[in-house]
Length: 187
Image (cartoon, rainbow, N blue to C red; front, side):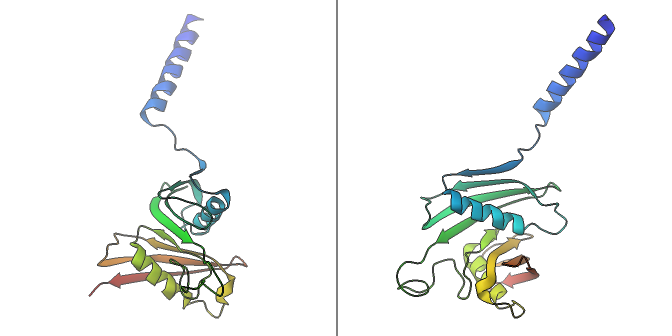
């Protein structure tokens, strides 16, 4: 009997030690400092923008980095996929105010000229993300821009103000995903 207790004690110690050395990743969703509706939208867009072969998002953490409300804000977004890939980026949003599309000053900052949604930008400078999102809206294969429910612009290498490459996913209301690759070089 003492032999089985020793084995049991050894196994418990090994499990405890393994837990201290490499704790398992947190699985789930976390939003801090954002309204629930904004959080849900960003989570949905992060799931829809999962790279091919990633196995889907298993952990999404969203943290407000400014003052965040329904009208406007900016947040850090971290997504971990089932294949272990991790993408970190930022997401900004603003709601147009006043009459007409985009309110008195025109389209909301961050929204592309034809897009009803603000793109999710992962690892790419904001100005280039907006340009890539505008370009993505011009490749809808005849779809109505009003049916766009998500735009994800993701850097797949190193993206700076001077150069970068990556992919984009435009999701339509019927679930159709339009995917393409892009590259930019500053002159």
